[in-house]
Length: 421
Image (cartoon, rainbow, N blue to C red; front, side, top):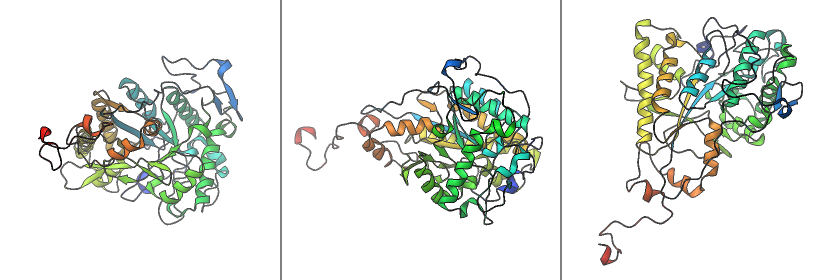
């Protein structure tokens, strides 16, 4: 986030993530908390709320605004899924979390917010965090203050009630070779995940905000997926996540093809899309566009801001269009609530949301909604979708490609009866 953020003792994003395929976290902020439900969506009745633990979270029933996933009918063209996701989601003085909640609502979209657990832990309680391979109280993205915790909890509460997903970006965001997540064992990943959950389940006790409304979900059930810091350590993370009941991982890099499973988890990696003006393709993440435009600095030449934002917007739109017109593979996009290069990437993402989420047969959804849909499909149909290459539409059309009946042989093919030639 911007320099105005109120996270203490944290390193700025680019310094934390000096690798080419990386992602960095965001922070805290200031406003008023304690809102019980989103505009136009009443909070659950008091009788339906059952507090969990110290009241930081609660059972409130099924999540609102989640459509039941439907299985494709034979010959039906798949919808075009687009997932917008946010690493280290927190609310600070920029109000980007609250802003993009409103953008999503205005464009019939839901999203995934990957919460960093330390954003719900105040600076004076930092020693409660015991990161793997580091001393207690260490974090490369700092911690929060009580106002920032209140602001972030408010946004998490509203986001969930609007149908968005709350995932995790873990805690201290350690990258590189000095105790970074790429060196963590399966057991260390389990410990990190447990602590991330615990900070969410005990934010009231740790912050002293005991009179605030709870988060309206059981985080042990809500948390089904993640993105690792700097996209490192996926192999051991997946092993730990599978044992803890996760359903997906989005820490990898892939082409725009239909996803499969790795180690029992849906592999919903971010993807490579065209990079306008270049022969190589670019990862669908704001941080990676920035690194390939302004290098290690988060605030480059202001004269280039508009060009750089347009370059990211157009690259994402080109990737969307080749999937929409081609294999219909879900488009996975990763972002941060940051003002890198004057906020140009925030503008680019907002432009993409407005241009794609209202198109026919497009569903802008969270990862939870996507994996629910994938799990509802016939395995044979998904296997067939995975045979399509980047941008490749079925040559005989979708009706024939996903038909329950075998496709007819072309006329003149050997073995075809004479009356069909």
